[in-house]
Length: 259
Length: 97
Image (cartoon, rainbow over all chains, first blue to last red):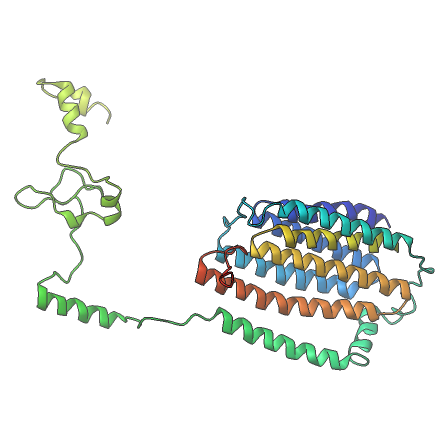
């Protein structure tokens, strides 16, 4: 019973964390705590096979699946704070409390006989006893389980499958389209001009300069243009420096001093 | 004996409240898993109470069904998310006029 009294508060706290955690990842971690604690309780109650299955299937497979889907859907998709139905959370809490008190009281008033224990049933080992039941008495249910698993795998594949709505362009298609555009409209088939050519900087926010000194618009990425971060004209650190220094000849301590 | 059943019921109640309260479909799903786990604990406890392994076999079958259910449910959530860009259970309200 030591394991039980040690683990029960942890499990209840973690389960409450599952309900109250604002981020879905925290909820998943709380659920993992509950599941591992449950596995220990199974081991304490004479079910070593279920202990292993609980850890492998639940914490190993199912929780990983949950975390993968959280990653796909986006970790930051936390709950909206506003309630769709007014007072729903309060009502759900009250109803849950009433339900819990009722069932716990009902269990408290039942009279159960002495605990038989699993010494006799686990005589040949717990997996042996389970397999005797699984492949004897419950063999039909076991067969149905296999059908269920195959159906679930097929269902997951069908549901997660994504139909391609547009034709896939191969590299040859893209090259042919570029050459056709060059023949029809004269658009250059090669890459766009690089930023900073003939300009004072070679940074990505500096447009390349044409021979007449005017900036070339499409040499700068659209996202930089959209943010309005393109360096305009010749405004420059060097110009400010020259203004500060004035007409003096640049001395050694200004340009050569820091070598 | 009763302690285990009581713990199982408490966990089940917390899970059901979570299903009602949470709006994120994945967290709702986790709460359902918590309820299934709680029933498994009750199964194993009753198995020890009665001295036979039928309860453990039942818990085993619950685990198998839960695994299948999670696979299908999560792929439904992913496909809904793809279509509607949201995993909230309130957003999927197309049947509401």
